[in-house]
Length: 269
Image (cartoon, rainbow, N blue to C red; front, side, top):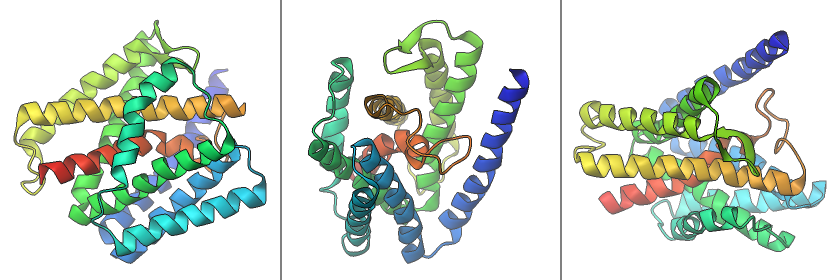
């Protein structure tokens, strides 16, 4: 069992390291058009997995993904400052806790696919909009998810006893969530002191409220994708990333965090 767990961890690391390095290289050095294209590919692949969970066949799923990716990329290119797509996404994530509590099935397939557009297109646009402001801003937002996930994993393994949402994701615990919240609080305090002047994280109550909200949304994004997988009867959204599953398994929290972070930045301006 220990050998298997160690092997699984090594596989996850071997997959994660080149992804992280590639992300950082593109974040800081890719021209805007290339950034839109690269992030658009990830959204296209995520849309393919989303369509598969909705029950579409292979060809139909790829058609859906291509249409969604094309629409998202067109908006990123021709209307990069458009705020309208972020509001339906935020409305959905505000309603998500009630949907999760009532175990509402996302059916029929047409509703599932429409929701995919509401969730995934603003995720792509958020990646582009925040990076247009500055690579550091997008990195800070992605850091919320990375730090929350890591802290939840380690604190959950060490202290976890009380299940957070046993019917949705049995591995998550309240102790893990509390550990993640504490880590995000420290992260926000450090950024309040050390963030670049261009980011303007100078009002501490505002900074804490914003980062706590993003943390809560990261948990929602994770739990909602777990719900979709349970409805589809699958363990992972795909198998493109050895040790991690599919693209959606890696960006589930970001689908909730990025649209909100973009709106927060728009409101702050």
